[in-house]
Length: 400
Image (cartoon, rainbow, N blue to C red; front, top):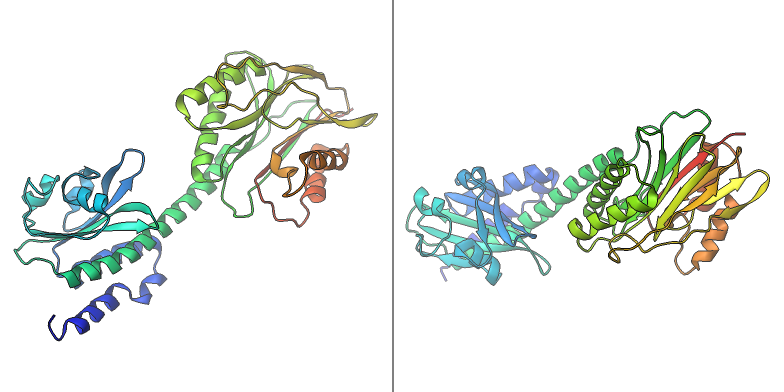
């Protein structure tokens, strides 16, 4: 090893791990990193390929000197060619000859790349992608270059994770705003209110509520919960919500609509579990037809009657059991009554029986204007407690 190798290595490491990079946002940090890598390693090209989990391919995401890879949407299967080999082996690979026998992407040899060095992008045991550099002359990369690129890969990985988290937060905020009703329908003789709050980690989940009317005049109230707390859970929730609305337009009741939605979940949303409850009423809004797919029972309150949990025949969640025949229950909705639907985050607490939480909810709901009921119920059940799960609550009242 030459005498100045250690000094050279230190200089190169400092160049790609400069703390000033942390002051940049995730996208600019990644771009700056690639420019520094190209300069420090005296490379002509540098490319980041991202592991597309669903298809097990590497997809070119960002490049310097090989922008064609990104513009043409280059895809490389794991295990094939140079980048695929780096991903499969999960350790640095040095390549001193670039042609159709060593790389899967023809752009590389068409561009004139002669030597390459690639390292995997890893987060723990999870493969995020591959980072590779190339030169247009015959100078091979060294083991020191491989060490420098491995350090740079750690920074690229951090930037990728940061960018992904930022994108998911932005997408989650958009989903949260778009998947809850912007406004309630205006129906004479009925008033509505709702609440939604995310879990402690502020990551959007699969809880939602929905209120809509159909051309027939039927009014639908829905609350549901897709298993999981992630952007993907929220996306699946949006698809289930849209499917349920579409099947409701066919004119069937809540039981038939849930059966159709269940078939869709089984066929298109593999490994998804959803609890849903639908309550449907029609003019003059004096009764509800209610059907539950694994969801907790609504609360029915009236000034002259004891507040109670509606007794329902509860079917399994959507996605749990195929071809389930679902049954709806008709419930009287007298003037002065209030019906409240909710998700389990409102009543469940760690280390406590669910029955205790349901009794707490039943005792907390006191008849009054719908918005007041939601506000006071959240005050009594949530108070200053940090929710461990998402909470959705929906209330409809028929004033006397």
